[in-house]
Image 1 (cartoon, rainbow, N blue to C red):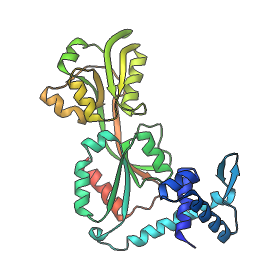
Image 2: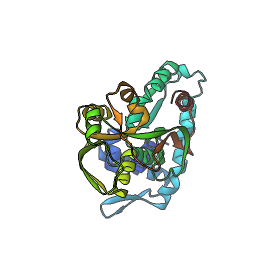
Image 3: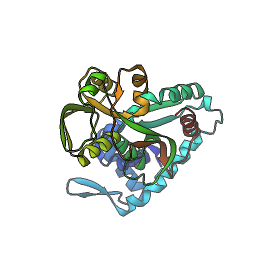
Image 4: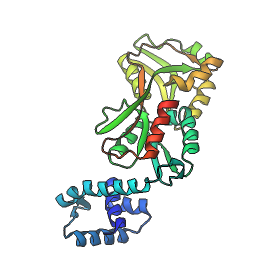
Length: 293
């Protein structure tokens, strides 16, 4: 049995379509279709059937998934028979929330490269919800993110610390808008933050809604350092984990604005699917996260 055909089947299941699998594997769609046809002939079952415009798994296809996952876990184990991690030539795919990637992961990545120099590390900056979903469907080996995403499902999570979130602004902006506690107010100041699924954005926006506080607008940016630079330039306020703003608070380039957010902390975790085999590289990365974060 050709492992490439099994891998193609696995990627179709992970991505949800033949077209997406073709893009991920750099194959033509006809090559994807041919490989699945060959696999179906070899197994003497139909793995997919056409429903409308979509190809969906048959019952036999659904039953094949755990066996394919076991095959590739075994292949991964074979690559790890070398007990010396420095000689390991495997790969590790990790999704990371941007604040953690910018302000907590550099020491971990540096230590990991020294421990396992031949391991290819694939780091992706992703929203916490996307990391959770990618772990659940097998697209990532590990995720470093905030667990406040409405449930972790079949994930095993290692806690990495609980952090308060801070509403901050430049001293000039904070002097103009010092009160985010009095309810039923309209404040002509901008809120600078990243994507709508951002955990601390959701916490702060829920707080504003409950207190009937309305801000002028929301400036949605994808870079945390850019958000900080614009806030320091008097363009508005932001709400971020304490470790992100700690240095600026110490220097006085940012100041805290008091709030009465009831549950203003977020929990960082390093997680993996509970059925995922923990390779030596994964184990090493987990240990380094525990040590440095």
